[in-house]
Length: 83
Image (cartoon, rainbow, N blue to C red; front, side, top):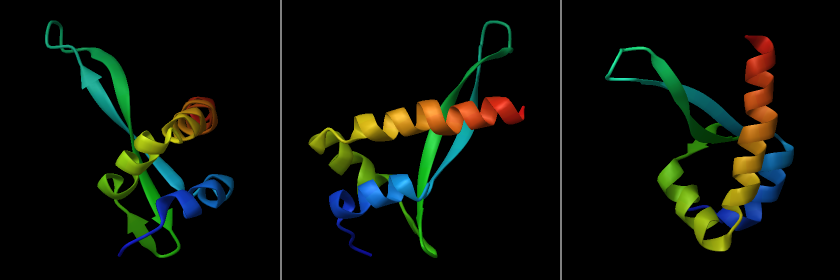
């Protein structure tokens, strides 16, 4: 499925189409949780737009900062409040 990432992106942010999954990072020194990596997926309607289809385009355009902001402030904050 070919998509016009830059055309769909602003509305996708407003509609909260981005899903965030947290992958734990474990220290090999003591096997304790050392942090987490946020993995983002884009659910557009009934379809998923895979990261390799949107991340390079957003990086090239500079819009990746808007996605980082969305993940960092919107989704991560909601996740922490629910924990």
